[in-house]
Image (tube, rainbow, N blue to C red):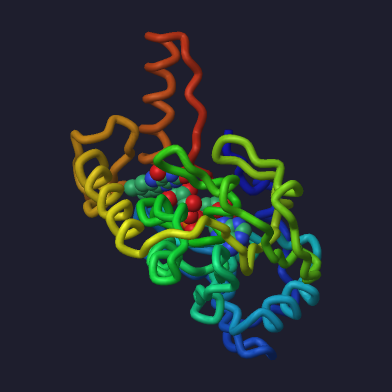
Length: 281
Ligand SMILES: Cc1cc2nc3c(=O)[nH]c(=O)nc-3n(C[C@H](O)[C@H](O)[C@H](O)COP(=O)(O)OP(=O)(O)OC[C@H]3O[C@@H](n4cnc5c(N)ncnc54)[C@H](O)[C@@H]3O)c2cc1C
């Protein structure tokens, strides 16, 4: 079951924060709508949205921030229901400075926490690194993949992660090896409030042409089975909640709960939310 930010946190006062530029050059916005930033295009605002300029800015900001204030990272919001009452505390969104992907050695890529799966897989192809093609098909960022142990086509992050750099809630920067992440199906034990700023992904030597062919095969298979392009109705996949227009987050969550109830009643099976539901109802 996905974990929501504790509701009590909504009463926390955030001292000393002001909208505008932080000392380190990042952007801090009060009461920032999150709907435009998430897949469902629904839900409330972040009490504060922080877009750090770079790693030093992120670390200094968190080190300074009252420890009671909850912090949550946001990627592409492709695995999130942001509830209509909004998210208390600070939501951190990694921008350009965290979106680079570079070859490290013959089989390893250095990936920024905000880089997309498409950029990682195409950089791997250009570098002749096979085995990362599956990331082409999962909408999201490296940080979201690492937290969620994202996977598809019989591979998941657990199979490719060497280690990752994480800024803890305290502002401390640590490198966590694969074993520290406690991976299970679409789950990690990454500490609360921790932000993945970089990860090393390892594949195997491959021919760019063959890698491209595998990426094409995966894309075609996705196109055929999932509503990846549209936010509108789909009969392709039974496991998708879709906002056809102006649904609230409350309606989307209620629909999911209704599906769970029906499956429980008719099949005796307890479905678990893979989507993380965050914020206040
Ligand atoms: C059409 C569609 C198809 C999908 N198919 C798949 C699939 O095949 N396989 C699969 O595994 N998933 C799939 N998903 C779910 C989703 O793509 C993944 O969970 C993805 O990893 C989410 O990445 P994100 O960056 O958008 O994270 P978000 O949705 O923004 O966040 C998800 C979680 O990760 C955390 N997080 C985000 N960034 C960071 C960071 N930098 N540091 C620490 N924590 C962070 C958030 O706090 C939150 O807890 C699909 C989603 C959609 C909409």
